[in-house]
Length: 277
Length: 277
Image 1 (tube, each protein chain N blue to C red):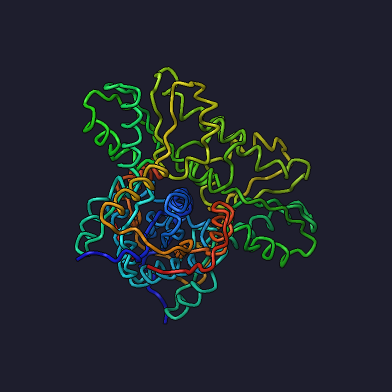
Image 2 (image 1 turned 90 degrees about the vertical axis):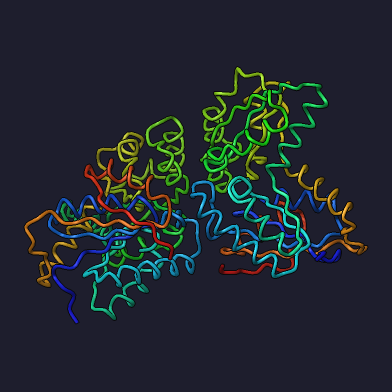
């Protein structure tokens, strides 16, 4: 069973964070149609249990499969850390491949290490409680290079700060100074932003780390590149000449989402629908 | 249809905040059995739409009514602001009365004004986005005294800060200094803590306001006193001599809830169950 090349790509996240992935996909694959689901009624995921995150992720995956997507991108690190195997198993029944932001972030860190010819890189990871507690980045990084040293830190306040729009004020700076303190003397080769909200704090993070040696890794570009390679290899690229459609579904507050999404993506969203799962 | 006097009191909140109400009820009505529901899978409510909060509140009310509660206490300001009428209507079909934290906080502010013989009090209110946007406190206060001046401010970061345990560090102080700035020159008679999480910041708030004239109002004691009066009046007080049972239900992470709740209430919780609504 092979999906249709003119079918849309499904992308989902707990809320607005996954729009960083949408933007990267729209840039690298402008002719692809995209269906996005943001679970704005149940955001945030990062403080929930593994079982609850799995249930929610499978409900959303069902929703995307019913709309005949040809590929699913997990644009939420918490879901990728807790439920990627379950989502992949469900999609496999429909011949639909799944890519997640954790493998994408890991791949970007590995590529950087190869470029720098380091087989014992020192990598920092920041993410939600659920992502950090899962140890998913450690496992993925150490599978590639057993000598990788991984330093990780949960930053539960960053999602609420981003949702409040406080990404470069004194409270954000003080919060990040607290969270980044353990990394300061570690001479990291890279710091992975293990949550799709965190790129909003990128310049503040660079400023606080104040170490030109440390590359800041945002997995959005990496997952978009992986999606492009995979679709090309399977001959599933959309051949339409027009700019792809963007259909958007949320579980709550569509107006607020539309406003934020249009601002962030720099384009009008024709259709946004509210769905109760 | 009259509920049974030996039936339990139902209390619910989006998460752990409502335990401040449980503690006050256990103090004032030690022989009452209590059933508590904390919607830990879907916390926080304060950033959700009115419709979503209503749906969740009605699901929880159904759950409590199935367990034959004799009274329902809404220990969540967001629910009291958005869904008290709907919860009351549903409970009325079973002859079960409903009290909410907003009327309790309002009553405490009014009693204070009467004590101080002020008919034009200046009252501040802080709460979640949903509570403040609803205007519920303004409406309730101005119904009592048309000359009341109400100043209100949404503080969306306080619930995440409390859940992170940051209630008296530098980030909490800076956040509260930002949120409380509009109240500083207002010479308030009272500041209502319009969210059951906020009593955790009480000493920091007093320190920042630095105005001995301003009374800080926490609605937990007030709603417990209202419940006691109401049950006595309806001859529905539990006549058992033993300390009442406390049964606890959550929608996610029962172990974490149990640990926090035992610490906060200062007693062992025999039974905590996870329920999917």
